[in-house]
Length: 283
Ligand code: AMP
Image (cartoon, rainbow, N blue to C red):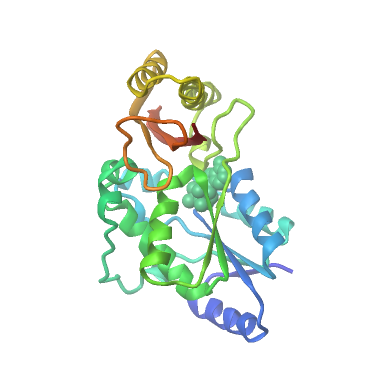
């Protein structure tokens, strides 16, 4: 049976019991407004670990834009229902006051990752991500934790935490779950009209276009230009970036060569909603 826990002290008590029974724990952090992408992570965790803990917490520390935080979709009751029906063992739903009763003094800086892609466009975002993930790692003491490829740079940031702090946690990167149109599922899609959701599918289409051109030997500059033109031709869609980077380091590639593992990453704003997506390919 699922347990819904709202306080840090109740969570600590429960984790203490789970740990005493020598049980493995899988953690799935989310910000709620759950969709099939989130649920796929929960399913993977259930397949791999004895106990699955999902968190629902819209983390104020990772929002660099106050308006974005205020309009972030909240569907707590149906989220909890979905997690219960999946058989998620522990559902942790704290308030911001519960988590940040004491304002953290620690600041995390992820070096060059701060100056590229999402880091460059969302100042302070990864400090907020790092803080909440470290808190959840500390509270839940998971054996493994699941993150989606959709937030690829977030995964690199969390891998950096695990490496630099020698954390004994298995990190799992889960594939992107998409709508039939190709649009990556995202809680933020709830804020878009059906028409804008259709328009937003152009992001994935442009990534696919770039992928196919790169796989058939296209030059990086030409491929980028074509992808950007494709997106530019969609009215109401504002491209923030489209980049071809190394899939591991996420550093920009000046040239692309056979054998390269690349991530094609894009961010665009539609009707005031910021969406990101990516594809990983091997040449
Ligand atoms: P969020 O609630 O947006 O913070 O996402 C929680 C976790 O779900 C993160 O690890 C995301 O990368 C992952 N996630 C979000 N969207 C998708 C998706 N479409 N497919 C797979 N995982 C996803």
